[in-house]
Image (tube, rainbow, N blue to C red; front, side, top):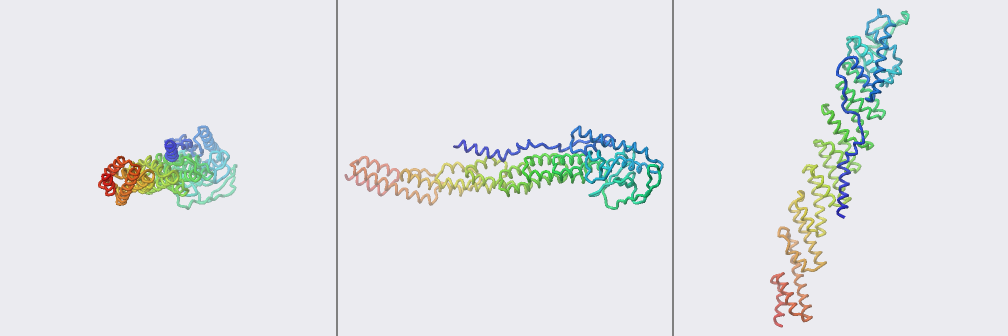
Length: 492
């Protein structure tokens, strides 16, 4: 029975303390991604390929790189069809680029979209910037929350239209024969915008892709894209996107109980320890998840999730203590207080003393009270140095246990045996109620010995009766009833 009990406890402990072992079945993309360090066209091309591909698969990157490079070089070839005398090179590059693009599409985030001729403000700005980089034109990327454009040598360029160079004025538009066919007007940007370099622009492409992947529920690929964006350019936009992607992914995993969210949180917190606010966000997610688990009465998982975080904040420690207390209470209700003590002692090293005091007192006092009511003195004495029950309570419970033990012995054996056991009790546990029981036992033992003597006397066994009286006096001392019996024997 004991071995079976221990197996139950072992299995129970494994279910919530070693739950992280199952996380190895969940695989995640590399949390930190390496990207080229130079600003050469080849390295910019490689970063652009990574930004438009929700994978770091070599074959996919090769396809993306080939597609982007093809558009850039085809656009350079298209320059030959333009009248170079009628425009500034940066303007002509934009026009040439649009000869190789088909249609604006807001959600054109991947290289496959470019392959099909679709673009948006960010991908067209990236392609234009690659062209400018090859022609020695300096680029600044400008962005708002919902739009992106560039400045080429300080001039604004709206890359989503072929006449977007230096917007805000009318421009003459010629056909392929050089004949004036009309004018074009593109609004100048009037919004407040932020500025970044070409790396930041490329990272915006990856960030947009991460957002689209998250919306479609492709969380692992979204993590990859946001990690790529952050690796290409660490600035506020990509940092916020990284936090949002991890938050959405982890929340999704927690909401439908996909194993591995804690593992991801721990790895991410370690990998991005240099990113301000990242660990705080992950901690908050895990704390909220633990609260949700507690509301579902899933105490063992809540304890496992919050302890796996290894965070020392006041809120985390409070949740950890709450989950732990509810877990121990749950064990005590399902398996009994003895089982709860086994779990408590097996996991005690994981908690601080201040977190254990309440639940420790609850478990030990209830266990000892059960033992006391059953008269199991030895079991209570074995729990003496538990650190949770006060010495006064301990003495009281031991005294109660002795009282119930003596009552049980009196019923099952005899008053004499009970009184013999009473005399063995240490003075430390001798309460008034126990003394009262002792006095009653002494009186009943005297009566019990007297009755035995009378029975022997009636059978004519005087010497044997005298021996019983002598033993009784040795046990009880100067007992008046037995002394009187002994006098009656002497007279015979």
